[in-house]
Image (tube, rainbow, N blue to C red):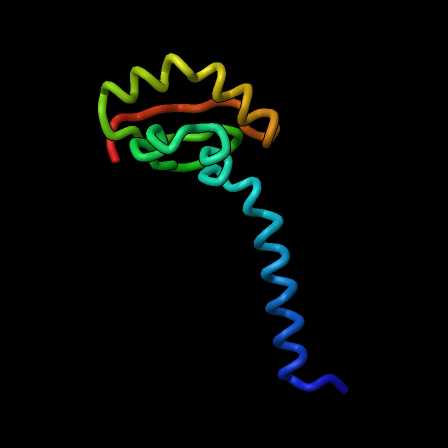
Length: 93
């Protein structure tokens, strides 16, 4: 019979491994891979549902700038996670 200490250790290791595997699909992690640090300072992910990634942008200037890059971002994000079908920007955050 396995000791509780060993059981807990195994469960925690399994959870940590699972967490590391999912982090590559986290929208924030994906954004960090395709955007510059300067752009990331102005963006906050709002939600990711049904293939739609919603981002809060802190100013209208950055909203316009990122809107111009939307198709390129979709292409880059789609290569990393095929479940992303659209990006929606909104002012706020």
